[in-house]
Amino acid sequence: MEFLYNVFVALHFIGWAIVLGGYIASIKAPGLSKGVFHGALTALVAGIVMVGIGEASLWGDGGPDMAKIGVKLVIALIIAVLALVAKRQGDKASDGAVAPGVKHAIGGLTVVNILVAVFWG
Image 1 (cartoon, one colour):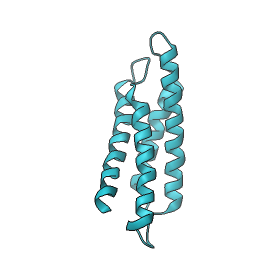
Image 2: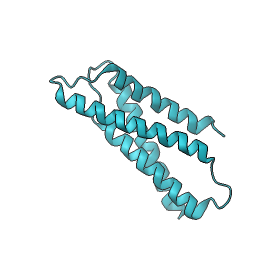
Image 3: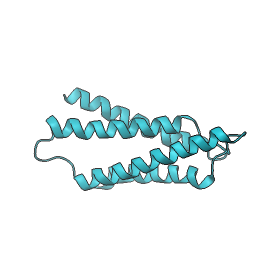
Image 4: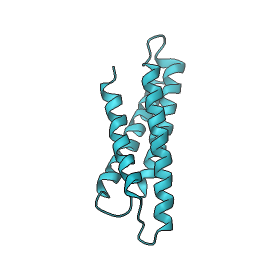
């Protein structure tokens, strides 16, 4: 079960790397990289599966702080919804433009989610 857990940890990291990398790559462009939405969904689903596997078999009584997991889940859900909004905006616009507030919110919240993961005990 630990191997499967680690597979989802890797998928979770890859998903966030796609989101952050796609955001950084398109900072000066009017649009947002198409992979951002898929990366957000990958990270979100992988994170949920990681918590399920950990609760079911790996963590026992001493698992992670569920408040931290809840905060990360809410942020990840917001990022996924914003990425969907950005994807739809980009599809509608002839040049693929996305509202700057939506694009920068995705990037900022991704950094916040990473910082929560690293610095919250």
